[in-house]
Length: 169
Image 1 (tube, rainbow, N blue to C red):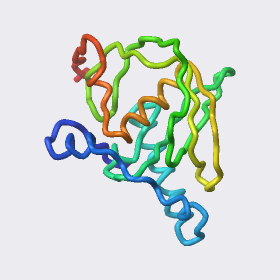
Image 2: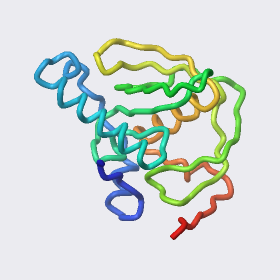
Image 3: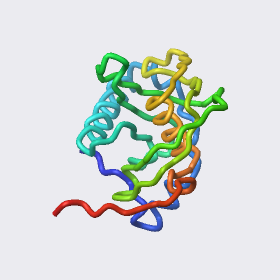
Image 4: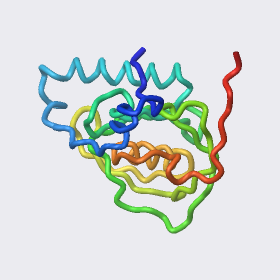
């Protein structure tokens, strides 16, 4: 399991609040990098799953580059995995929705967070192919949360009525 960077340490919080740099997408097509990138994505997916998360950005594991992984159930309940490099939200619906949100980098804190209900995200997949995804509901929320991370933003900056949950001991 990969260690998750949290706001518990001042230097780590400073890192999480720094904007990431673009990922060099040429690396995704370079045979010498492909295996390492796949291993990294596999480790991120496993770390996210073991922590009961639905998304994990590169800076949450100490990498200052612009990419994230996410795994969200589709309309049929099947888990769909995403690895998106250089993501940008290019369109947002006017309609918003406020839902309780948490974050692996902000342990045990939750709060209602307003997000756009629908977004269009562009970027590159793990093979270096351009993609454009129209997302709504939970997937749109996860995309906004992870892109926020890559921009140096945390959900606690906009959440209303933050509350702490003490983990069962």
